[in-house]
Image 1 (cartoon, rainbow, N blue to C red):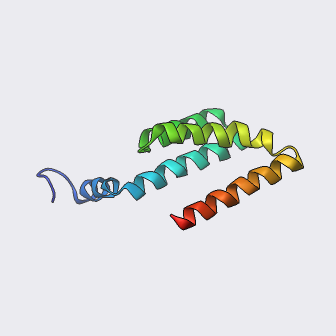
Image 2: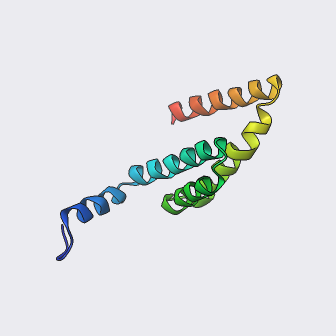
Length: 101
């Protein structure tokens, strides 16, 4: 239902954010775009994308934890073969648990 004075585009964009999936996709997109900017040493743009991800997320604490994990912890852990195997085992375990839920 459109309010008086709003365009169809505004109504469509507002309806998009009523769906929680669209918000999560925007938050994850901002997270991964920020990581790409970090790889290219675009620190300001990365910060902008991370702030966007935190703003659009339904769970900012979880998104903040993901940013720290992917930007700092994971690159350090991936330096040795043992930790790479441990991280990949954790990922497989998480995927199996999500498949069961």
